[in-house]
Image (spheres, rainbow, N blue to C red):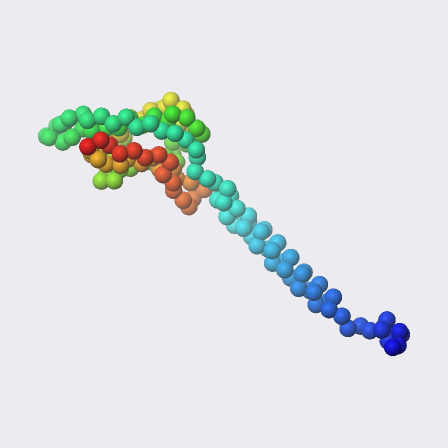
Length: 146
């Protein structure tokens, strides 16, 4: 065995592994930076707020021309403060109509809003829309009595 030949040998696997690692690191960094530059990183962390609503249904009887005037009072019982612009209320059969909205631009614990044209047996949902775009989430729901 010639020791001089062994020490001057230039063939090795190290340069190939080094190039592969450099490419892999570059691709991972580009993906992470691209996600935050395009604004996708902000949406990942936006979860639906943790809140509690109470529903008080009332059968208002027959209104004008035989139309029912059933309504529901929604009360924010606790949890996170919500932006009123991000909250919507809808029903299964139709869109419920607001008769008295939340008092401010923000919805705090204790705030109440009233919605009418709720049919018996209809499920009413409080829907939160992500302000950064994208998703909607049902954060509370209740069914009107029959």
